[in-house]
Image 1: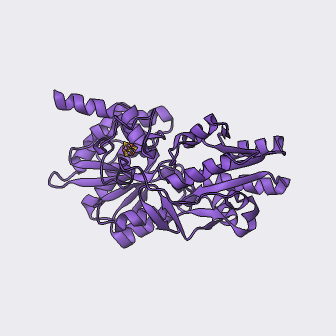
Image 2 (image 1 turned 60 degrees about the vertical axis):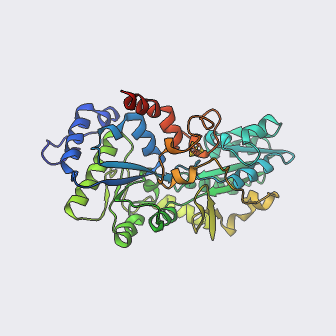
Length: 383
Ligand code: SF4
């Protein structure tokens, strides 16, 4: 930890990754590494980084000419309204128990949320893991238990392993609505977007524990932008920003791995193998605010098609436009900051979200709102 000009120090425990003194050292090194004649725009891909940035005030430690923009890596934020409607339709089927992660309960569809469906009598239950859903199926063989699966490559292996276990145990009343997505296609779409000019990426640490650092090589090779795969503690994010500025200063353009304590370059072979067995790529998948992106979503493979809830139940399968007031797409693309959305903190709050970015703690709007950044910014402006 810490860069040139400071003594190297081994950091192992979580409180050391939040060490204020080391944070100040890194802030000084960032200031020294930033070219004052240049404006830097760095995207943190992952919602976990957005959360850490707002929670620990990391943006306040960066030089004024280093701007962080938030990327599409929040799994709840990217679920489009039509998929929520599909989940609600299945939840209203007779004898169905629909299970999902807690954040998913409050994601708005076109006529409410899964929580609203529960209030209307549907049996919707929060689970912490797909294995919890499988346990319910085991305990209640007379009911159909459906798991509404979301997430990037980080959570997809646990869904895959659950399906393998369901098959091994011969559990037939269990199925999955597969909304798993992959990280590389939306990054490519962002890089192709004329809306956005970025200087580099703070790469997604959680996803990379599964896919490794290798899949991000296309970013420097084809788009000439550096990437630093980053951990989630405040010093991780500061050090990753410093590594990006140093690459830019040196004229280098590489994938570097700041999170090497967790992320192997080639990823987790066992997790990738089980995903390859259980899932197949969809030709395209709709992302909230980003539209359809080719080969960006996963479905159940033909071998596991009998566990596919979309085959077992009729769903509307209709594309639903986001509410007019919602600017989640622009937030997810890093085109606007959360507080620049017209309904931020007024019509859209964590208690009554209009858009998905206000639902999950990893959503940029919720993170910004919950850690009081909006209020502090205005207080500062008023002084
Ligand atoms: S404030 Fe609400 S509607 Fe606006 S971008 Fe954020 S989540 Fe979406």
